[in-house]
Length: 319
Image (cartoon, rainbow, N blue to C red; front, side, top):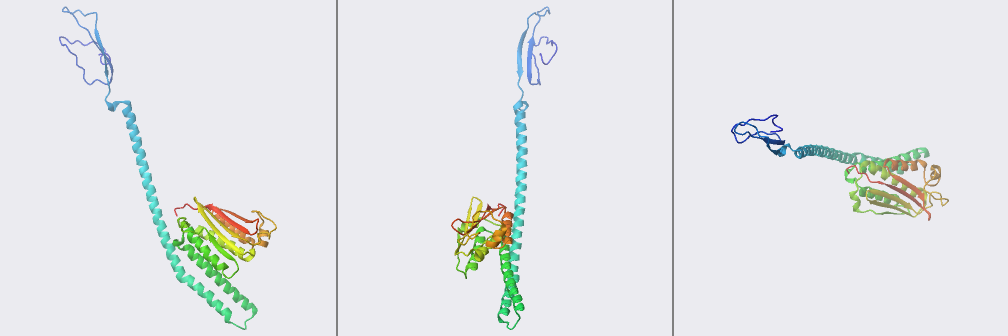
């Protein structure tokens, strides 16, 4: 048997050959015989034999096994990654829930304690200023400043408590807050204030404390400038949130940034200071827009008035 034995094997009178445990491969079985006198014949017979391996020893089985092992390892890795991500998200949700609870409790405590007390200080100080007679002009001026400072502090405390409240963490609630501020600001004036685009669809746009605080203060500054310097009849706050992008615009129909002497988005701070408030106010508005990674455009309109436009992608931080 070529491939198994190197030489001939004498079988004697046995008429068959037996080979066991042959390895997979190709063999050639050769046989020749002798006559009665023991003389070997010149011719021989041969047959080619191919032993196919069992399926577990084939190349495709090795490749399939390696593929299955790699797939199993990848699946296990993905499972562990997903489990870790799920655990991390769950921990983050728990931490967020705890922060919300803490914010809610702080807002409640501040509202019950600090808010009421500051309001009382402002009220009592104003009553003293109204009822005290015969005091010097200087003392009266100081008392007036105390009244103004306590009233401003009361407003700031109310804004701070509002920003802390997690129930107000939406674009809708922030716009409602600005609407209430604008209504109160322009209530005793000849200015007509309106808010456009305010709908409950904005409840889906969640904002964190940072966004609420900076965006609110930015447009409050714009409203105050419109009241003090624009000499306008109408002020409109417009809100538009689509495809994850927020655009808020404050319009007025007043004298414009340059009293009608020019237009354009770019202007020096000293011009703004002379025409529409102080330079610090403008810089604060720009700074707040930068903190929110947004663009702020303040310009005079061709038909009169001023436009303050803020645009930015809405935060995608899990809110």
